[in-house]
Amino acid sequence: MNPEAQNHPVTQRLQTLAPGVFDEGQIFRGELTLWVPASRLRGVAEMLRDDPQLSFRYLSDVTALDHYPLEPRFETVYHLNSIEHNQRLSLKVRLPGDDPRVDSLVPVWPGATAFEREVFDLFGIYFAGHPYMVRIVLPDDWEGHPLRKDYPTEGYR
Amino acid sequence: MPVTLERVPGQEERVILSMGPQHPSTHGVLRLVLELEGETVVRAIYDIGYLHTGFEKSFERLTYSQDITLTDRMDYLAPLSNNLAFCLAAEKLLDLEIPAKAQFIRVLLTELTRIQSHLVWLGTHAIDIGAMSVFLYCFREREDILRIFEMMSGQRMMTSYFRIGGLALEPPLGWTERVEKFIKRFPARIDEYEGLLTRNPIWMVRTQGVGVISAAEAVAYGVSGPSLRGSGVKWDIRKAQPYSSYDKFNFDVPTRPEGDVYARYVVRLAEMRESVKIVRQALDGMPEGPIKAKAPHIVLPERESMKTSIEALIYHFKIVTEGFHPPVGEVYHSIESPRGELGVYMVSDGSPRPFRCHVRAPSFANLQALPKLIEGRLIADVVACIGSIDVVLGEIDR
Image (cartoon, chains in turn yellow, brown):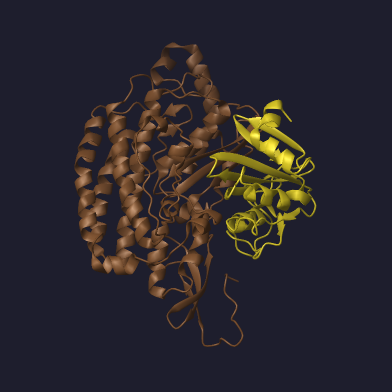
């Protein structure tokens, strides 16, 4: 973790609330990114939303990255926004290549519903506890997950 | 199997209705599945993907400069806003400083885009509810703006006018007069629309108290833009996290507390007036100087200099054939598009093509609030609600 990220008020606050909750952090171009273990994601998300000094009540975006052929292969990315404090934060979770699954954040931010379905559709990452985990933009008999790096741009022929 | 709703046992008299994707009031190819009890909507779900073209996969295949042409085609009613979001994200990644004149022209054109997009929204929204004539007036003014775009970039809609590092071309002679003429005339035209609708009893009955969403719900569902401000949340990225020199402009962020269709209508009309103010300030304060950043390995050289300078020729060849190599890293940059928070998440692995480029489309998040708006309302209110959140299916499906 670079020292700027370490001294950032959001990092400091999170460290007092739940020591050792994140694996890693960085600031690149002024943007704070924190890596959280998959098992603690739901708890951290609730903390980030409910703590009055953080109050990340707005979930901007959920997406994922595929680092194929490296392991851990996937990362889910959450872009949070605090309207009260005018502060942004990216949260990342590393997931393994075989059977990638992570807790759904729909109970914390209902706005995650469509975004998580999109990640499921295009990356094949399963969100446990999502109320309606089906494909969203592709037909439900589609084979494969197109945004994975081992999926050819022209599709399978 | 297309998306459908399961019947509730014991409620066999309820009708499951598929609305769309070809329904004229769904503004594209949105499909809704409604469960109706008489004329009341009991449950609703949406079905999207009819316009899915895999933009995010294509981004990874093309170089950064080539990707700009794809962004035009996502939100086809606000192509310049998409160009801006993509360019700003790439420029943040490259840590590139943009000349003041280019920033001002970007602000001016994105505000014209906002007016243009709101005009299409107003016309189609009014036609959905039954006010036919508004549509014709709105498209009259929209045409003026599209002509300005054509003059600047050579294209009416798929402009691709903003490039990484500045603008594509020096604006032509006489463009300021064109814009000047338009913004002189336009405030009176907004009065005209308001005269047709704002105090119109039919319009008020159809929109007031319809499709209500509270501020807390709107924030939880990720609603942004005028739809969020119509619920009383004063959040505008242009003000809160200014980009492209928006901090040098003086404008208000209109809000309304009611959170109904009428509130969203009032907010958007007020926004058009604010946009005129911004365009005015941009014209008056237009700085002199270049329109492209000084970064020869990223920005294409002038055609003339290529005839005399070998470096310019080499850079041109390199940029066109190979592209440029941004540093390894990732950025998320969001702007206030006419529909709300348009974010671009860009990840670079150091190669000339983005490792991943994801677009956070405002309509995609706003659409999630739609079932909330229409459940418990009459089926006639459904079209009013769809219109009021102003979705563009091109950017939802991507």
